[in-house]
Image 1 (cartoon, rainbow, N blue to C red):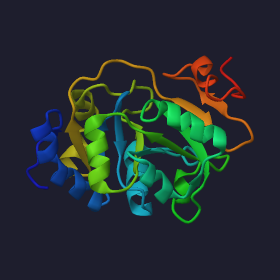
Image 2 (image 1 turned 60 degrees about the vertical axis):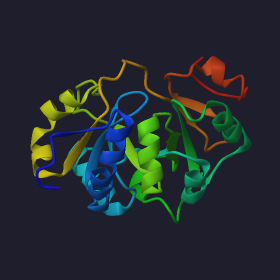
Image 3 (image 1 turned 45 degrees about the vertical axis):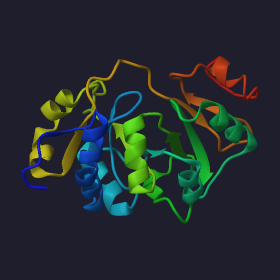
Length: 223
């Protein structure tokens, strides 16, 4: 990876194809990627313990505040061994791929505990970003995700912001940036807790509660 550019082009189809090798190598080495999503730029990587620890160190994440997982297919969800109540299945069928994060129970034998929230759930989203979907499929498994920013700084919407804030990590090779261009400002994904008897909004976002209730009438929260 020595000599890699500060940001790897990740926009056109030829660029995405050319970036795959370096992106997969970064994850194989248990290091962190920055990548575009359908909302903002994210940090993430593989979901094994060493990779998660590397992400925690880079982000300076406090204990008890887990990362979400990105997937690109129902087979990846099945591989995580998470449980979907019927209402969660209905929400996923209606809004995935897209900016809806579901917090699900299960995955005890598959997901490291550092990814589990304080109430025991794992947050998952099927991304709708085409290039990121390709990367996930090439990787063959879920990836971690958290916003690419330092505390108190808005999430990055361009690779330039990441290079400015994380230049040292990029220079060391602990972080590699996939440059998907400037992202349009957009709200974060809506996060719904699906570990109980009824779904509950725990973070309002791109999909309003009123729209979610069309599929899950018993939805609690966010008025």
